[in-house]
Image (cartoon, rainbow, N blue to C red; front, side, top):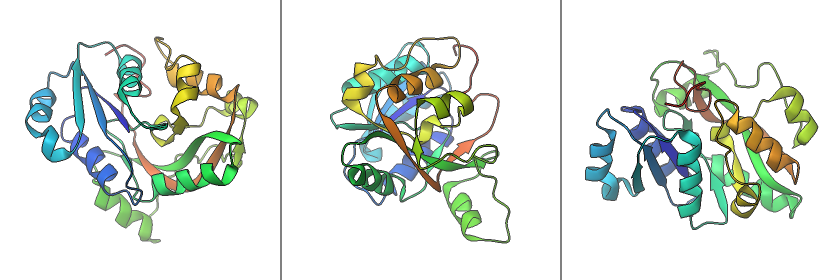
Length: 224
């Protein structure tokens, strides 16, 4: 798991907690801090062992550079990305690994539906809201419901794959050059490069929480 981090505040601890709650247990967590100035660097230096994470600090170079460095350091065959202000639901990785194994090589990329999270709601609140049918939950894909099998043309038209939901083959990610260094749209370009070589399998369950605010890592229009 690769987490790019830039001044995330207390939201980072919720992201880490959501990984440790995964029912799939064969993983490593790499946090690439991209020049944080809000105390995150010091917090990680003092707590990395207790948090069971590998932490690397770099001078501010943007989310693409942070994610790419994390992939270079990762030991696994598959890579999952989680922005420092987002969260995963407990069965996310287990269900994605099963979906890829079931495809028997047809898919080297998996992604999931998600919940739009407002403000600083905790993982527990998000999980409780999903279980309570009387509480309306806004899904990430309200405007576009993808098919189970997603190809290059579908994503080109819709652009509806949240970065914090993807699980992708490390070798394929590196073959296409990783995240490009662009002013905006780097996640979309990466996914199109990947989808030019493989189809993706989509899980319609909401298995991640995307925090909607002006400073989202994946939607920022300027280098932080």
